[in-house]
Image 1 (cartoon, rainbow, N blue to C red):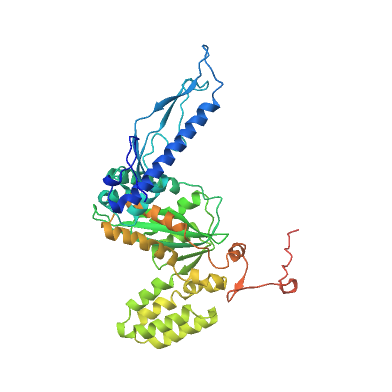
Image 2: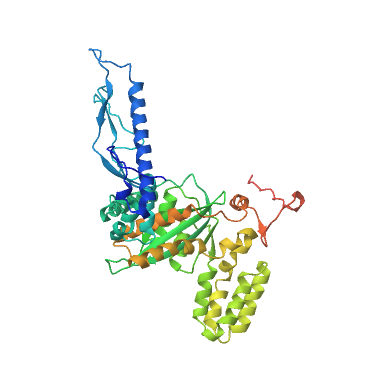
Length: 433
């Protein structure tokens, strides 16, 4: 029968002092403590042995072991572990700085109170809905200690996220080429303020087909000037004009886009457009209207889509002219995606990459009733998007994205291969005598 017997050795466990249900956890913590102690001792011994030949004027060694530091508790994935880190007395002088050389453990730095895994988990728990004051009651029993779980710890994390967000907003964009972009404005409640936070978001598709957050900023009600400022800032940092921009019907973004990147084509989001059309019709007409709209954006090519628009107009123009006008007036922008690879249509019809990503932001703010300030809300949204970005998949047929940037022609979603005899001959330019 296996038993854990208490001895005079520090840190030894006693079966009588441990509840039966937690004995396994205590064994895991004790194993982690011993392994960490052995690793720290080996690291210190290796440091001392490497300097064994360095002596002072009296022949004494300059680098020697010097007992242990005061014990401290480190929170690891195995729970709270008490550590007695070995201490090294290094009497050497750094010639460059004139100060004494100090031994610093790479395994357990002097400032470390949590393992990297715990440091990664804490912000994720906060981002996904755990309030700052709930960390201690939620994790104290699980980790065996409340060290490093206070609300002030989360406050410091939020401050770090704000610094990261500001650095991200200043980064250079000249080395990245975004062929497609999605744009949207997301409104988030601010718990301590009356006005909402309006997040202006740009997500792009790089030439290799991968998706990436381009910029995230606080705007004013998605106005033209707010979007223009965001786009001008991106252009100033080196961003090239995208080939196609996808967004809803908000006039602010399109006004800013035409000012900053006038050559970029426009694609209206079918999800938002469908909602706008149905809002101008009675609910009794929604089933039939949804079927007609699906026949437009789901058509096999642009010709059939145009025919579906005419059919929609014939069916509803007399009764619901405002609803029909929302389609017919933006027909060119609604059908722009047909001029690009068919594999990309599913990505270009809507702003779903932004909507699906910000579902986690809305979930987080719903639980906590919104961030406490605009700066905290912007930093929280930034961290959530960066965490989600690692799981974004590339667009279908990513090799075709580079062809789109190169100006390749696609008809009905297929690449047009032009032979030499089909290419038009450019007439010579006459010069003045």
